[in-house]
Figure 1 (cartoon, one colour):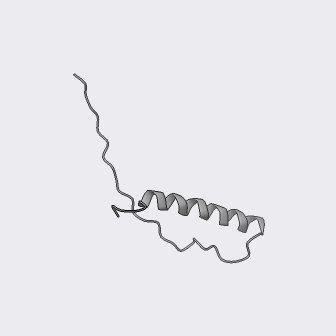
Figure 2 (tube, rainbow, N blue to C red):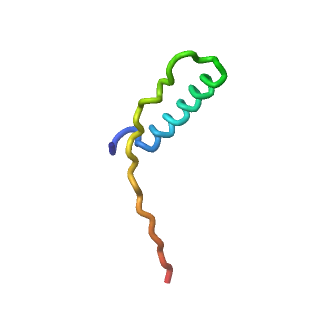
Figure 3 (cartoon, rainbow, N blue to C red):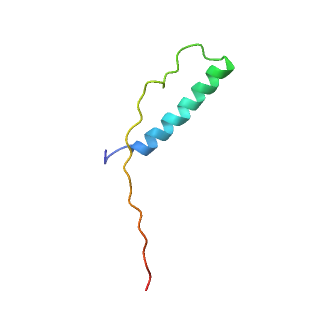
Length: 55
């Protein structure tokens, strides 16, 4: 996935839309199954963090 949308961005969109549907279901405005319940999030790349020393 080096080209196009990254997993982190897609997972953020997934969380945002999932929250919208959760709120709609909780308020009784949406009467169907949660559309994002069974969608698996993508694995994100783990970036190594290191310390730089300035001499």
